[in-house]
Amino acid sequence: MRQQLRLTTIELRYAITLYLFQHGPTTVAGLIDALDYQGFEIPGRASKSVSDALRTDLTHGRVRRLRRGLYGPGEMPRAAALNARDNDAFWDALPA
Image 1 (tube, rainbow, N blue to C red):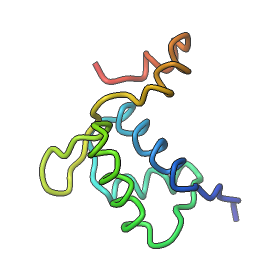
Image 2 (image 1 turned 180 degrees about the horizontal axis):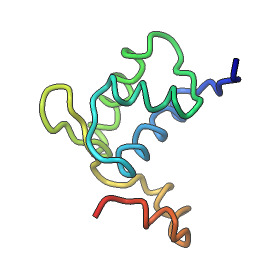
Image 3 (image 1 turned 60 degrees about the vertical axis):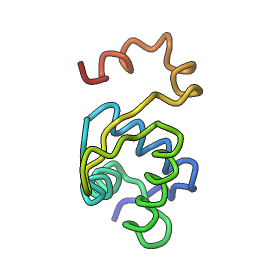
Image 4 (image 1 turned 180 degrees about the vertical axis):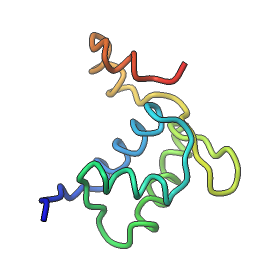
């Protein structure tokens, strides 16, 4: 059995935002599956925690709602963009 890293609320928000920037639009269920596959444990009821994180990032413009149940990237969070400015691998992973 593998050890999973439990995400805090802010870590969950950043993980979701970065996942959307790297992999493009997906659903809440897709985000839950992806985070689980990557070894993260989502606190509480996963669907509720992810929905709450998406709702927060929607208001900040980091995530866009494309249609019911489908979310995509919005604007890159300032801190993530500043930290990744010199990281070519990060910029290469962004969708064209």
